[in-house]
Image (cartoon, rainbow, N blue to C red; front, side, top):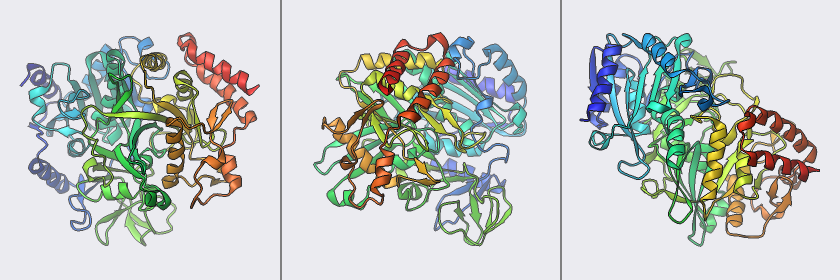
Length: 579
């Protein structure tokens, strides 16, 4: 074993003083034993062996149910390196604070050591990490979400990502999720919620990896990757960035309308949340999903909205903060089906149909192995990644932003992504439904100064001979409280238009914001939407966009003089086009 690995584990043990240390090898035998232990201590509830084989219910503390951005810090050497969108803490100060909180926090507990790989072991995309934790929930989840194996100890280098986690006392006032990019280190304490403690996920795969990507010339992005095969057998791969709980998983596992299925269209999933993207020798972008599982939002997921997600979490999965149906030891969440008369809610209390409280938490989750997914692409393990034809950006907007529009070029696409906005969801702590700018859907996840991040995207574009086209989509327009676009499988109709544009078809109308489809170019066979509503979702309202420009100017002021000049140029051009 590498001395750097053994030294790191020894440091953690010396500081946190566990009763014993257990190395995780990823074997079924070991994980089965740990799950059995978690059931005996009531950390897990075993679910119906016939209906949900090897599935468990997990409840996090009621004060610990979402990513908590106010307690998440980038501990770069200077505040300038963290930039205007991140919370910053000076590294030495952060290390002292975390050490003081963590000292002796594992007394009487077991410290688990998890060696894991992001992306297939040995692939050009692969990066390795070690996470120590005192949570069986973290161990089980990491074996689902990442590639956990003893083989990693044979290939790991001194540059591995060090992850330290302890539930400690689950004290919200002493809860910190800190990233140290200069040391490839993550330290999370006093949380047990997945997004804060599965350190391979947002902490490594985005915050730390975005720093590595900038230094090494690639991209680490909050994006799904989906493959579309048309009836002629031609395949297209699309990446898409959306804030959490805005439909990434649904789009990644999309089931096309029957009119498309009958014609031979096929959709395959490569990833639903994170994409690592590299420039190929041919000057195109190639994307890989570094994860090995899904960490999806449960409420609203059902056999109609996302059958593939439902089927993915019916074995070997963890269900967090959902309701328990004691009649048959299965689970339920809002939007799954008709509610049973009685349930045990996500906090463990009795719940009755018609109750004013939710049975499942709005941010309840399923953690499921990606190999369970019925539409998993055979390219999922491709060590070189898949070639991207298009990149989508989108969020929840009730008005202003049309169903889809195409950016004029790469620079304009970076501008579009830098100003994207979305209404907040329950995936992050705080108010729900508030409109906030979320550039590239990376606001909570970019591990360095976002001005430099924008500049990095612009520089990547300069090296592309075969750049993917960039589009903005919005499935969420509303009128009088109802959604105008049906969404879900019908989003295939928009993807189909996008592929037509990638093929060079002279479709669409040039507008001040970009190319928008004509309503006649959207396949309406079997589409349940009025012509009036379709025209509405494709409309570009100049008055609303003038208000949007004012808000973009306020947004850009946060970035100060370091904002790349290309983005201000694009904003000025948008103003001129609107006039």
